[in-house]
Length: 282
Image 1 (tube, one colour):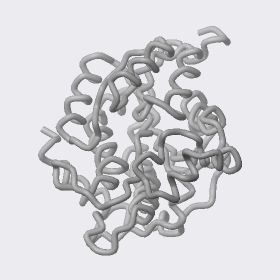
Image 2: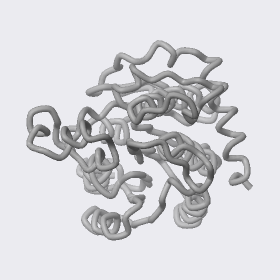
Image 3: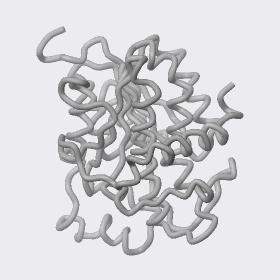
């Protein structure tokens, strides 16, 4: 392993990598010697990113859990080892809508689909003592998880659904640390910052105004800056450079929603999620 390619021999899977911080991370981690699997919804954009990163493209729409199951099977067939799984796919959705699986779109794409993918890859991840990195957001501070209404059948707003899904990303991370650390798996979540990407396409008019007008130059950061903590987590050594189960902002432990420390809430979310994805686990 050369100093120029410190990740030679490692395989890294990045979802939500067809643009934004996922695409930047794919290019940089590939440059560091890793074998990269780029996962995205758009065939054209995903293949373009994969080509630039000298990576392999996998097309998957997280709004269909059957596609997530198929993706997992393809990844397991293709890669005998997986060193890092980056659950980075996410969106914010203006109006409450249901996927064909019957789940609220934001909840499924931002939490349930990556939860399923992680469960399906778990044996391979454990075998290689892998790292699992989950993209959260500072928005988690405004999230509130109600185990009796995970999909906002009451009181839906785009921002409530989004911020709650980002809290769920942290709860998921902490529960992975509790359940799987004895297997050698290490995990962290992080806030990339307000990144200037295509993220806000399906959001409300106010969010679109921020993301897709000159206002973004005042408030948003580049994808390169947003990807920094992700690249750091994926390329460094857990237990030495960063701590298991921790939420990071700019490479430092960040401020998070106090309910993230609620072990009963994290356990309940895990168990309810397992019930929802159970038909796709066999």
